[in-house]
Amino acid sequence: MADGSVYDVVVVGGGAGGLNAALVLGRARRRVAVIDAGEPRNAPAAHMQGFLSRDGMPPAALLEVGRAEVAGYGVDLIDARVDHIEPGFSVRLEGGAALEARRVLIATGLRDELPDVPGVVARWGRDVLHCPYCHGYEVRDQPLGVIATGATAVHQALLLPEWSHDVVLFAHGLEMGEEERMQLTARGVRIVEGSVKQLVLDEDVLVGVELADGRVVARDAVFVQPRMVPRGGLLTALGCAVDGEGWVVTDDSGRTSADGVWAVGNVADRRAQVVTAAGMGSAAAIALHQDLVAEDTARAVASLRTAGARPGE
Image (cartoon, rainbow, N blue to C red; front, top):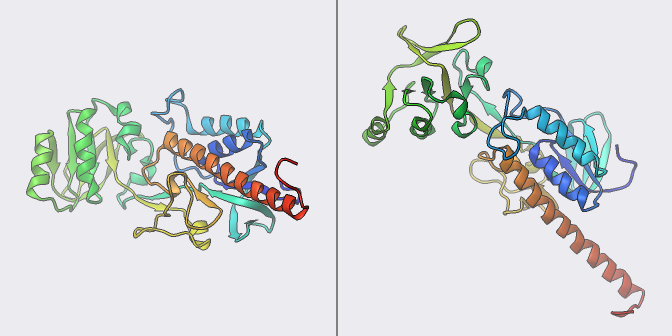
């Protein structure tokens, strides 16, 4: 916990993005704190994929290793929830404590709002999936389904034949044009009309999808597209600009429109996977450090001039 002095950077969110930023900043010998509420988006998943050297690693194991690494560089790890951040910055925790910071990096992620289909929430991250690149290989060559919950369902279904030759798109009320239907047919995706009633389980294993008319289509795994909602309340409260869909606007380094505020990971990019978020954290940390160096240099120069010093003296 803070000892009353000012942190160079307070990171809010201890996932891959936040921890990687803290790692780079800690190695730059900056004073850093990471505040984490312990609610990672990928907690339901048993393993994460597509992260070089970490493929198949449980998400919790990555965070455990990451926390140990950043602590080794003197980064303070604080298990708490941030209530609000006052400009300047005073990072107020639930319960009243506060940390003072020169810069803040927000890595609070997003929340997935799942479709209201019985069985989806309970099976989420197990055999109800979202990202083919994250989980497609693990369900390869199995009967797969896509429950249409929005316009992106067609795109999702068109991706899946790379992993299985038995893919069904459950229309679930989605209106599709002739071109979309032709594309699905050309890719070997079968379209099943009618509304989905529920998922069918047998001894805690997904075995099919039941339609409203009583038909059951056997499936071993299904993909859905959740509504992704950024956990960006801290950012908007600080005046950070957002786009038309409510996502914070950043530059390539994660810098927002609010002075001294950066954002990385899923709070800024709904498409960011774990490895992507880690890279975003690294880029933000470098930009943050250079921003701090510029400020430190300007202060030092002003102090020298006040003292009447000349260059080279």
